Length: 214
Image (cartoon, rainbow, N blue to C red; front, side):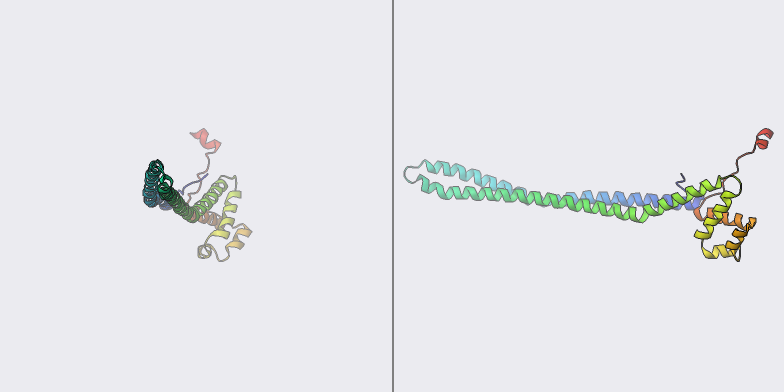
């Protein structure tokens, strides 16, 4: 599998794009974490409300219990205190609900920001990189085919993918030249396809005669 181009400029651009995509994802995750911490602070009023409700309920419960011990009028005295105790319980429950709402809102917002950042990066960068990797890997495999088969297939890919001006500079009718087997044009088309992908031509494998001479 070919991950990066052979030509230095194309490879540098690919590395820069990869680093930029990773930096964007890291920035999105960092922003999501910071946003979660900031929004989680919204739960502070809920904590205060919960504590105030608990304190009121606890004090009113103690006062109501003491009022019930007063002869004759104990129940009458305890009734309003019991209602205040119930009010404290309501305040405590409201504070708990506010804390839960703030926590859920902070979590959902942070997740949404992180997912959006990752989706933007992957949507804009990953398809381009995967398409180039697939095309470059296939082209590299074609350069290793024996004989002229790989060259002709590379030339055919150039006819379908290379810019029209570049094709016209090679021949007035490059498709006809390829069909008729013009070796010069076919070789130039194959080289054009490799240049389009930022690849160098494959070095031919040493023959048996070369090995014997060495």
